[in-house]
Length: 107
Image (cartoon, one colour):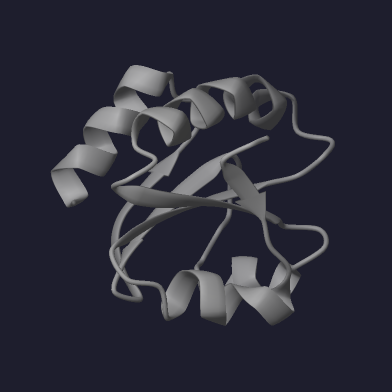
């Protein structure tokens, strides 16, 4: 079972904004090659940080309003939220080690 949970617009506020602690939101799309390549890295990071952070995935085509609200202009985009506030943003393909390091800096 994946620790990266795909969410829709109707679930986003509850799972991301109102969540306690650090939430990593992967803005991506099904047609995006780098997004597909980053998913296993993201899943490995989610497994490593399972007790410290929540990992969510938002499809920018299915949920364009969320992507617009967070200013997503390029994907993959990893937005880090803490207590509902953006604390970090990373755009582009990242390895697990970088995802984990950025998450740990924002815990």
